[in-house]
Length: 563
Image 1 (cartoon, rainbow, N blue to C red):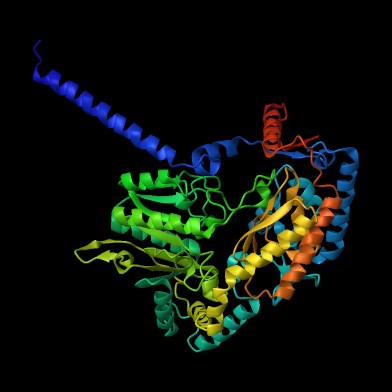
Image 2 (tube, rainbow, N blue to C red; image 1 turned 60 degrees about the vertical axis):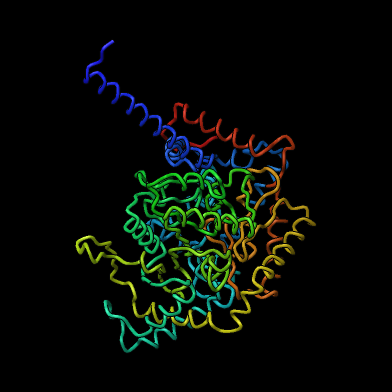
């Protein structure tokens, strides 16, 4: 049989197309193996499901018995809930009233008020348990609200407050005095900038520094520089990790458009290392060391606490081993390794996560506490990666600017913070930090076990999350009992408690006493009634059935109560 050239060419092209298709399928399958099984690992599916979930809530009749508790427990819950509501009304009246007054004007308040608890329960909670968002003073480890209540602060201002509010007040006061003569002159540098740069280079072990106005901005610049210097398109982030709210690092729920150049992979996984070794389009890998507390899980919040499946466990050595493996693969493949230390920087060690885990990154971002109490973002990096232009191609630049970068007042407050890090007593404090907080957690957990309370605390140094040891649909109620005991929590509730490092043993003992008292009160009010046949899986299955039934009901499309 004779073949002409056109026929041979046709079959050749066909074979090449098949080979290319097979290779593409293999790459996609390998990439799929690197994804975590949870919804956090599958952004597109998560967004589709989020769009499907109907707006439904429990009316007051169903609110107290969504787990089919016996009537006497339902009565106890209702009575306890109304006692809490009256306490909140009388004790936090002015703070709550101011919050309610401003909610129509401040979109952040609308969001946080709506998402303190699972959405099915939110309308009833918002009607009765009005949480104040306004405070007027801080003193040591306490905050004072508008009603004059003193509350032990378990928020640490989203991680900013590492050394205590009194320290940051002093940083700001001394910093302002330092630059008072210059004032808010922008574009030029005050001399304190040079001192800060020297300190940051020493702390990070890296060559150059750029200043920004937030941690989100610093991460954006780190990723942009990695793409610029590698000529590759994609960033790798790990399942559940938070790196700010810009699009490329938030590919799932919360971002109205898809992120096309982002891979979300499993942390602490050989599959992920295999992908990094074989793909040619990965510019950088982003690591948030806080994920060591709950690898591959999103930051815990009570709004998603529909059962007791929240899990946290910190194994320092295992995570350090993972970072060493990641470092080796990134070095082998020319991938930029970025540590996002906006949250944990200076909370774990003077040298941050690099020192704490013994692994060196190519680029490191800092924020929050580094500004001495003022807004800041900082990027430290290798000289070759920080350069934003090319001598041989002058039109090929990597642009990054910001009007308020290196603001004199921020730089002066930062100088005070960095000087504090060099004090011998601060260096000594870091040496014992893990032992201090681990022992505190163990003492509290022992008390909780002795009292037969179904909760335990898991920590990564001074950052905590509360876990629940028996299936329940009402764990989120604990945040309100804690607030009633004079403990200030952020809007994520028991998902994240953060302590400043100026907590003394006496301060902590007072917090532990209130914590146990809150849990006892919640137990006595019947919220932790437990059906022996119930499991976290059965709870989730039941919720899904409720949602499907509501989705298919004639009232679909309206936010209607489930009775």
